[in-house]
Image (tube, rainbow over all chains, first blue to last red; front, side, top):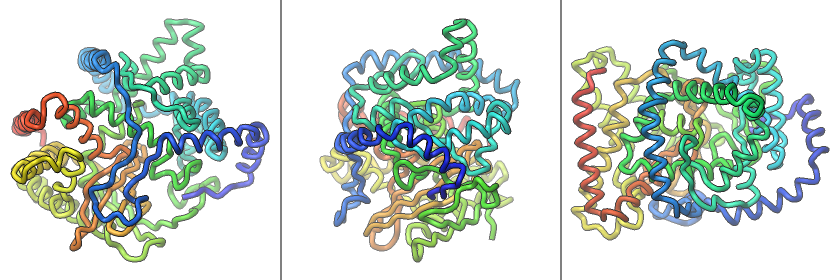
Length: 303
Length: 215
């Protein structure tokens, strides 16, 4: 659904647009390049194809010349998870209630808003940037330094942009897959992306000022995150025959989905936001292309 | 992949099968088709899950058997297998194909449907249905842990019914993911090596299910 523009958002939109209007031309060129490089033709776009089998997503292949080394690091991360991260996260999860851990997660998320805003702008997604800025304002104030997420109730949905995606939109390919110790799956493009984003993350500055505190905060964030997703990795390993390849492929598909904005949230690239509850506040976006009436069923059937 | 992607992909992929718990009337699309198939399938599964009788510990096996039966109705594992083996499929004999379909569907079901015993409150909202000829994609949002996870089902019309042949979570297609997984094994150990690995994995899963006393 496409959010309807409100006056407040128009103001924000115009300011941002005025500031970076010269970038749009470059971005348009970048998108053309990206379309050539990362074409993702799906069966639904192929007309007249009767065979349900010929339904390949034409992902550019992900080179993995460092596979032996990557597999080593994958094993390292695997051990690290079971020997260190999981035990600590389990204890942590027993101490802190889930809701509190979600709040902490929200706070970390809120802190990384500059990354999303700047990269949305760089990709020409001004409306999205505006939404993320509005989220930051609402969540920092009403949400108490980001612990809560009241913005969601207003229909302001979080985007998920980063510099790696920006580089992808501009036409830079993955180059090759790298599985880092600690950081996990990544690529040459995405690690450049992470480096770029680190300038926009307040955590990096804490780290620079006082290494100990910085590492402490970062580690706490990671443990908190892990505590909310305990069991995921185990399930993943159980359901794949070769977890390394499965993870590499999942990462590849996911990143390209993000770059191309192929997600159920996105009707068109550049737009986002599924309105929340119909009864939400005035900031709620209105329905756009599709009008959906649903009867939601919460685990039980309503007749 | 970042943590969010990890959460989404890994936590809820098993939920796809049975947490399709919502109706919706999509004004832009007249009539159902793929959507109706999903709705009906889900309705049946929910009925089984919510049946007081079925919740008893001793009914665990029967409950799982019934859910698998419903899943078998709307999912086409043969088609899913074809997509997963991709280029390798045509090279296999008829018996090999049958064997693969048998193993693959058990692999997928045993873990994903097995998780049904830990079913908890979920909400799914369908947001879009795209039909192009004999192919369709039904998009939904799964509300999980306060997040909205985009979940898409791909169906095809086999003449009589619409059947699911792939699922995508945040654009990560299950069939393509398994394809990559199996491909890497076929390259190193050949097709027979893959079958051996699948059998071993299934044995492992079956053993775990027996040991899993957490109903």
